[in-house]
Figure (tube, rainbow, N blue to C red):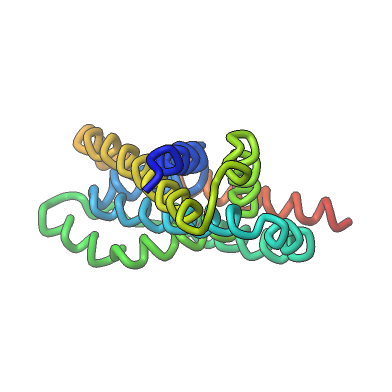
Length: 213
């Protein structure tokens, strides 16, 4: 395995995952409300989507660019609707952190699989992510220096490790701060997080309407 390719992939995955967006808000909110495992599951879903985009960017840049040019409005519409629904659900989420049994119930209510799937969908329907990969790959000359199929998959593996590292770090930090939040603080956290996610979805619809007018 070429260590240089692996390190480049890790850097790319970390850089693409790190900007604060709807999934970061979800990861923090879920970790503070439901615990570290739910936060990790949210991050793994986003990391998997980032890995898919990384693979697409390195194996078929031209195909991806053409697909986005032809279908970007549809992708943006679906992504915006997913964000709006997720934002409303987050705003209305109940705080179940009053006891250990409630913590277990919370994890049952917002299952690890559900957290994983929702963050995967939010990330996979965000066309900005694939454009970020293409831009960073070009800036770091990844596509021009990688050689062979093995080297390409080494980059993709690095992307996943870098993205996972970011989400692990974010969820771990949020978990440390978890006990400092009061019940009232968690209620406000749900409202603020939901409003931010909802706002991203509304902005996406507004931008789409503006372009199509």
